[in-house]
Length: 193
Image 1 (spheres, rainbow, N blue to C red):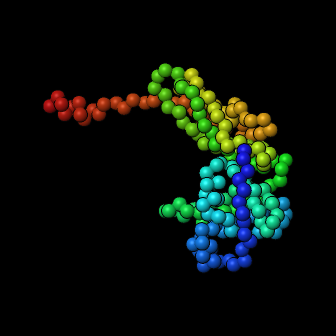
Image 2 (cartoon, rainbow, N blue to C red):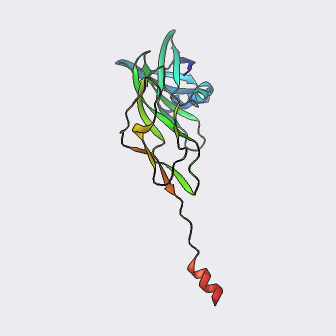
Image 3 (cartoon, rainbow, N blue to C red):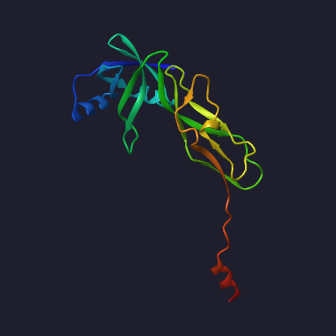
């Protein structure tokens, strides 16, 4: 996992009007908290932050008043219609520290011949891992599975140093038999008349 460096500026003005002015200037208001320290209210460059947040569980290296801090996004607020960033909460982390994050589950492989459907019961798994080695996703093979098969959380191979927090017996993926539609009885009766 790569660290993405961002320059943060401490902000002293608060409220709706101040936040709008910050966003107009191409910045995003944010709060950095954790490790018992007072929350720091900062602004971050909107474009750079938006690019960084495309990576799931990104590790941000923040330069706040000459002090370098590592943080991960904890909550991201976006405009419901236009999608631009409104506010971000960042959690301070340290190298070697374990954090609990959500990791995306991806599937690979082909099912057994036949008409089957793959149902992703869980799209993410909650895992505990070192803050500087957060996996972007975990991959599950569905190769050769048939209807009625399922994959539990405990069956998924996790990267080294990562432990499962999600209930081990939780169903992550299940394979269902595709159901064919029966011809409408009304159409058949109408043709005979």
